[in-house]
Image (cartoon, rainbow over all chains, first blue to last red; front, side, top):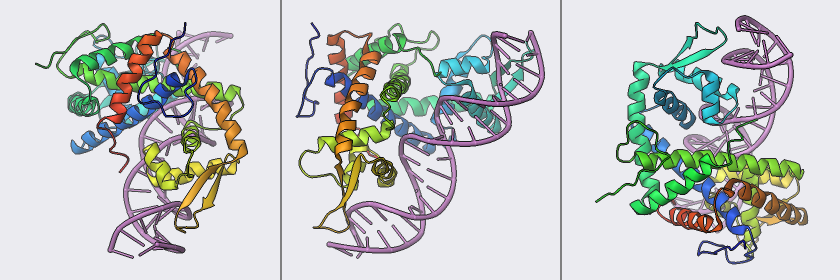
Length: 165
Length: 165
DNA sequence: TATTGTTATACTCTATAACTATA
DNA sequence: TATAGTTATAGAGTATAACAATA
């Protein structure tokens, strides 16, 4: 049937099939940029010299409660090429939030651990992140936010996992 | 009341207030990246040497049916600093999709017009864009896509317009 | 003086390709 | 040979700051 419901946000001319979907792409781009700008603003305010990508990596490391993640694990979770992780870890290691530790069982692998500094940075980071999210999501009611979260989760867990190749 | 509904996608440990919102931020980042990668893939397939940011600019110019937009207008619509527009227009003018035209009424302003090449590029672009969107949104039903579009529109039109300053 | 766009510069993010050291 | 990470390089995207031309 391919029923499409047009809403207010559609630009006035040419409402062809599929345009609404393409519009979602544009909205995602804009919101993501706003979100990252807001996050940067809040982090600057806290004197946290951590870039958004570094922040994502830090959070992933913080989440791995069991064994410290390998570079390759981080690449997969971040959905980037392994080479990109090297740059991020270089910077984080330089500012003392993270530590490369060799894996005794397999001397090719490098495991990434949070330092104490990293752990407190992560705590501060969470505040900035939430403040930014709250700011961006403020036009939505809690119920709408839950709805949005559900839809986004469906998409993220859905087909996407092509990774960066 | 601040009722928060936790869903499956919550990471298991620590479910503090605000975490769900912050999670939405992460999902936005991931989806946007996937969407742009999909778009690039489709555009490469069509031999369209137009980057995502250039594509956004091109679409905006295509939408301005009345008078051609000024550089400053484009900066505002793209939510970037004017300097960033210069780079984009330089590239688009170099590949012949766009033309800088002086405004006779105010010799400071530069107006941007689509060339014929630009118009056909724009048509091809739309196909790639929709294919990418369809790909990313495939896990959702039409009704869910409409719902998502509505929520994102609310957010985009909502508080955000801080622009890049 | 305020506005419009640009030159100059720099940084973040990420990719591909080739190489090293393991295994 | 396949795997894990790195060096080398490049390009997209965008920002700030200083400046020129015009209003």
